[in-house]
Image (spheres, rainbow, N blue to C red):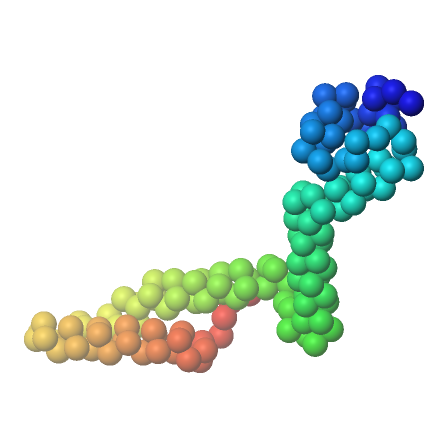
Length: 140
């Protein structure tokens, strides 16, 4: 058997086959029964294969973890948090947008700017506290 035929059997170039002979990876023989098992051992130990096996194991572990979380009801649809946030932002916008109308009567009768400021701060604090505590009805 020639190196050209052996390299074709292993899907290698003759140059790469010579490199593997040169670095001792393959036995100094053209006998396929000796060269092929040595090449297979080399491939199995190659960093690319080990890396691919590691990536596969990590991906499988992540998939299994996600499957377990799904079965336990711990996963939520990806658009649900966005809907929740939109609802809260809309409710905050509405609460602040209507603030002047709700407070106009209180402010119209008041001359003291400090009292107006305190009342306004209290109303803003109430709105923010209600939003934080979930006491507002969120628009969906």
